[in-house]
Image (tube, rainbow, N blue to C red):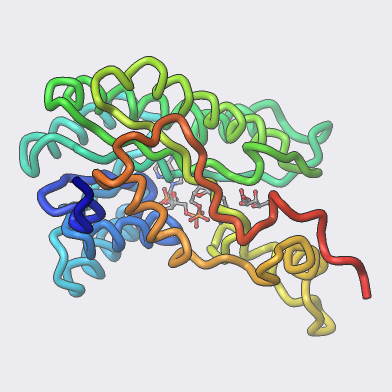
Length: 267
Ligand code: NAP
Ligand code: GCO
């Protein structure tokens, strides 16, 4: 029988990759507010320590790890440490990601490979590390942070779109392969969100006018605004909670309506 407590995360252990700022930090904060013990990782030790202090100042139990999601040995060590100190990971959010904005024909293959490695191979490594214990425990939640570029392309983001398109299908395949063990794997698809990753797309022009891309996105979004990391908190908690136990293999787009809209006509 439905109970509003189904949306809570009390007693759950969550691991959010790339949780030191931006979308990851917001999702981790939402999980903590919902009762979860939160673990998070990133590559920068300073930022991990700063985020851990922020969480602790907010009164949350938070454990930060310096760990690159592409380093399989370090990932396995981090997961083993979490399982030992906090308990088996119930919720994994594959949030860590980078983007390189370079015209494809000018992009070095090494750049393409780095983006795919972090944005697609990283989530594979992370999921592979947590699924066995989830199977043993009898449940688990995996949330892959996808993108508009899981559905659409645009100039200069070939590597990122390839990775995020692949992440959509990795999400569906984990659903297909592990749904029988009561593991739900879904995608969260943010629209255009104001974070450090998109800061270059919102910078004011030398004459003080808005960045053309900023105006473009506001015209493409029915909500006529950029999203904020806070806009993702509720949807992420839903996908992490018992309330979504029969939701599997879906991509929940939190985009202010971009994917449904042809775009505002120029005035
Ligand atoms: P961000 O501000 O650039 O933050 C990225 C986070 O990931 C940082 O904590 C970063 O810390 C960490 N990270 C990067 N590479 C890592 C690696 N190899 N191992 C571990 N941690 C790593 O990005 P964001 O805007 O919050 O985006 C977060 C996720 O949402 C990304 O997957 C992005 O593709 C996706 N997304 C963003 C938007 C948007 O409009 N902002 C929209 C849709 C989807 P370190 O650098 O210290 O490692
Ligand atoms: C870009 C942006 C986007 C967003 C996001 C949209 O350069 O187009 O960075 O890729 O980050 O992925 O959902």
